[in-house]
Figure 1 (cartoon, rainbow, N blue to C red):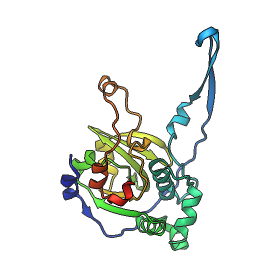
Figure 2: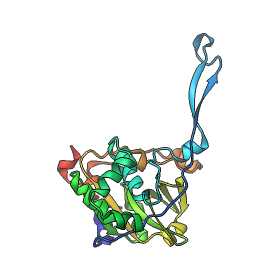
Figure 3: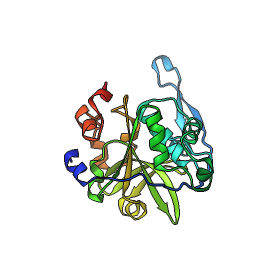
Figure 4: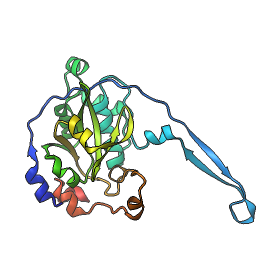
Length: 239
């Protein structure tokens, strides 16, 4: 779907306060596996193995506090979308510098806080009201707010495909959610982080898919300059 059609369904929204919530942090571990007699001459091959728990949090910055899912979601986009070596702590320091600390501790960070931080570091934040039938046309990772049984929580929307939505959740890890469940929890707003240096082959836009015969036959193609321009990037930000 062309973004000219998509953006016609997007409505720029005024700055709005969104609430963050507390989630549990899970440890992850990696291991090595030895494959015997697989190399010429009978040598062994050692390969790293990613545990299911580690895979759950692969390419995600996990939240560490009860008010930092927004900071962790932003750090996830900046690290894995832009290649910036940032941490959740970096985001907290930067966001606190543009926020009312007491309000944050009571209500969490807002998209306005995130927008102000991005402007401070030379990037842009854009919020859009999106119609459900245009979700598949969004080709860059965006930050979205979900209402999970009364709890407000920021996650990264990586991709929408047919009846599935791929999320990077700072608390619960990588998730594939049926689109009906997503739509029932989502407030209809996406927040895009725009700036110079976006990786057109980012792992955030090529998440691990559910294993099907069809998915085995599909190949990933990096985003084009034209697609980024359609999503609000400027020519100067592509080089």
